[in-house]
Amino acid sequence: MREMGLEAISPGPNLSKRNLAHRVFPYLLRGVEAAYCNHIFGIDITYIRLKKSWVYLVAVLDWYSRYVVSWELDQTLEIEFVLTAVNRGLKQAVPVIFNSNQGSHFTSPQYTELVLASGAKVSMDGKGRALDNIFSERLWRTIKYEDVFIQDYTTPKEVRLGLGKYLQFYNEGRLHQSLSYRTPAEVYFGIKAAH
Image 1 (cartoon, one colour):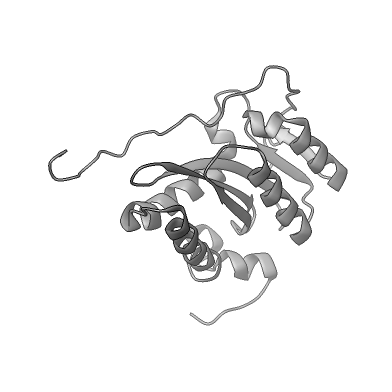
Image 2 (cartoon, rainbow, N blue to C red; image 1 turned 135 degrees about the horizontal axis):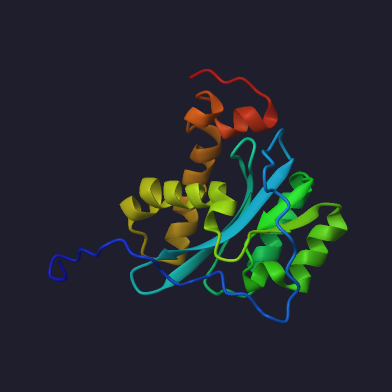
């Protein structure tokens, strides 16, 4: 496999490490389903492997419509790219609940104060409970299997351009069975599109 340049798909860096000095908020979504657009936003970070490095992708997802409200890439795990994505998402709409894992980005005062100041409630998954944020996990799987693994990006610029195109397709062109074969944009904006 090494001689042919093949690699198995395996977990990358663990991005959910908690800072023990930061406050953890309760999980507010037990038994709650997203009932309308902007009811629940989920946010998460994943990694994208390049030829010689990593980039990190953060996305804000509307759980009801599966619409990617905002996203951002960075070559480091500094908090600024997370705050940029949150600010961009909050310009689009303020959800009732903003859900995340207990990673240090999402327990940081910069993140929690930004979300609370918007009027949204902060919700955090239980420790080690990836299924509490299942819609973001599904988004990562879709992005990686339908774009990242196929494209095999080599540079940050390449991945930014490619992901931009893919996420536009994901929002506006990709039909979802769970949305009665509509696109996230059709559901989020309440529009009808010809397919």
